[in-house]
Image 1: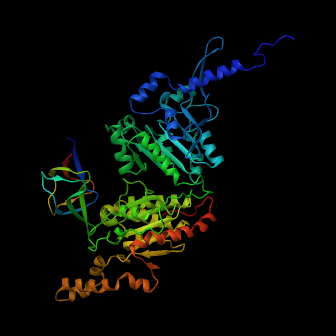
Image 2: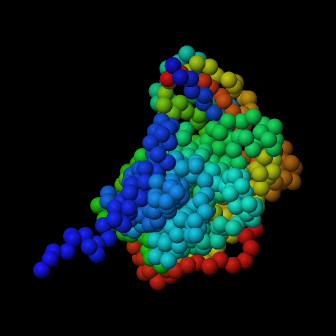
Amino acid sequence: MSAEPSDAGSWQPEVDELAFRRAQADALGGPAAVAKHHAQGRLTIRERIAAMADAGSFQEVGRLTGQGRYDAEGKLLGVTPAPYVMGLAKIDGRPVAIGGEDFTVRGGTSWSGDRKKGGQGGFVEDLAHQYRIPLVNLIDGSGGSVTSINRRGHSVFPGVHGFERSVQLMGEVPVVCAVLGTAAGGPAGRAILSHWSVMVKDTSHVFAAGPPVVERSLRQKITKEELGGLGVAVALAGTIDNAAASEAQCFEMVRRYLSYMPQNVWRLPPVVDTGDPADRAEQALLSIVPRNRRKAYDMRRVIQLIADRGSVFELQPAFGKALITCLARMNGKVVGFVANNPMVYGGAMDGRAARKQAHFVELCDCFHIPLAFLVDVPGFMVGRDAEAAGTLREGMRSVFVGLQASVPMFTVVIRKCYGMAGMGATDKNGLDLKLAWPSAEWGSLPIEGGVAAAFRREIQASPDPAAREAQIEEELRAMASPFRTAEAFGVEEIIDPRETRAYLCRFIDAAQERLATSVGPKPKYGVRP
Amino acid sequence: MASIQIRTEVTGSVWKIEAQAGQKLAAGATIMILESMKMEIPVIAEDGGTLVALHVAEGESVDEGQVVATLTE
């Protein structure tokens, strides 16, 4: 019996070619391009995915995509990989769809294969949609290039690779976008179509179009940093939600954000044991609100003292600073805190704060995260600048979004609760449980502005108008005690500030049944003002 | 020594100046107090430093984002 050659019937030659092709993919744009990228303080897309995902959890899809180069006999010389790397991975043990542009290949510009890998739509977004798992986009690309006209012989209609799937995902699974380089055009737009976005100090920029286009269109000479650095994109415009000091910190923040999110809208967010007693009472809360009504206080500290220790993660800290929005935990359950910031405009709601509140309330409603409002709002911001900035429209939009939301909401009035902005911090379509601290006060408008207008004739007729005005104010203020409203059950409870955590924890625990029986997508109807 | 520009977060007026040029300020120390929306809003030296210059006087109006003081680390 003659022995057959050991490789007869074996596919070893093809497997060797596969190994060669994989090595080509792993080499990205080649050593020179990778070195240049590193020299700018940026990681490659493969390093980014490795840093973001649980160790060894990345299962790549589409590793062989790219442009093969062959000799005259058709023998493979090499492959320039497609400038997009993606697949399935795990973050903190939970599966996610993850992908990002490879800047070292043609600057991460789009690539035309039979099927798109990601960026706008593509396999990675289909994966998130079909498997109902979060999508993590690691963005580092400048979008379309006019050179594609040369390649195709025609210009493409906008939307040929559209945002249909990206928009659909916004109602299905958490979508996180990290901007890790210069994002212009499509990739910049993609970054905004997310539930949360983050960018890195100095190395990340976001704009509709970069400096050369701006100079050509408007004759403005402007740097990338001035046009779309943190100062503009995060602080002034709120285009991107949070800023990270480094790529490593950015990945840590993405991981943190996802820890508060369910895998999809058909599930509830994960409950964890934080080891913090639900009945913990903080002495500091008794005196944190100054008795002098003109003095502000640190509302972030109030949140820290009430929420589970170490569980507070603030979203958009640099934008719309009159309002603070945080994801946190209460007795292990995820809760969204919305708090007015008395340090900025006395907590008055301006257009930016209203936009921030509307987005956050919608986010929490979408992912079944109950909301706790810590209220200290004198009303909508006043003045010509505020009117010109559309405060009324933005403010009423946030009220509208709040009234459409069906997730349980809890109101804790810390100090002022006035007018339409105050109403926007209540659960009028739900249980409408309103707790108040003894420092609370409320009404259609603050007494001190209102007296002069409402009692104008009486004040003018008095021999000492100023004294009469002060006297009326004092009379009204005595009747404005929160205890009088509690007698009428116009507010459900006045609580010792130290009881806030225990009270909220009880109701948030009880609300779990309501949350568990209300999962699924939240279709919206009507027209937002 | 890097200089730090202190900007206001609110439009309002300067109610009280609490620190003087040349003074060393601890982290979180109040430089001045603004009045805005009937509230006293402190302007603080977040990371501390030496106050090099004050750019506004008591009673003056300020706009959101205006530089009101300069510090060095």
